[in-house]
Image (cartoon, rainbow, N blue to C red; front, side, top):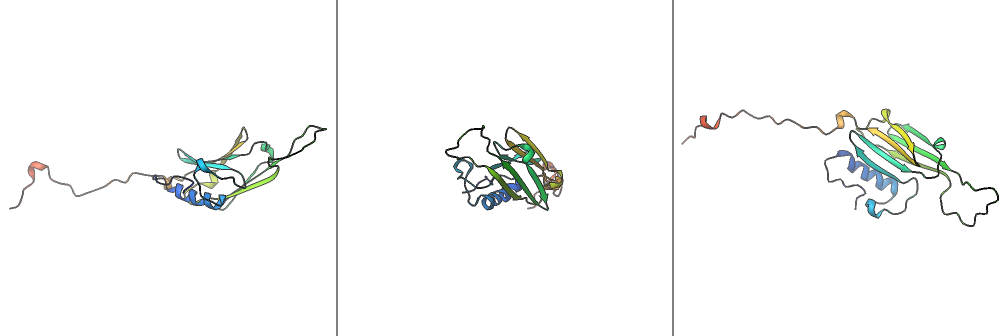
Length: 155
């Protein structure tokens, strides 16, 4: 089962399915995703860019770090437990501390133009698709045919 539906014509989806299988350690559909380590994220194509959205509730945007090295992008963040003074924690089920996710992107994306934004606990990375990698229509040329009324049938 694939994480992303690669039956369409988008050349990046097959690469991202393989990427998700490597990152998540297993392949699954988004509807049946298993718990994963690292930072949960979605990959969405929006117009001429791929957008990766990382869920990081409770993290502070000032503790985020996004680095690009070659074709790899590393996202790091911290989530500190915030307890009012005098509180006693009996159980802690939410992740605290530092977390990190590294993604190696396929060719055809402009990592020099990568943009990052933060809103409501979601980090969005926008990576433009290079013009040379955009789908394009190819004109089909052929030998001109004479009009139907000027064709002769040999026989």
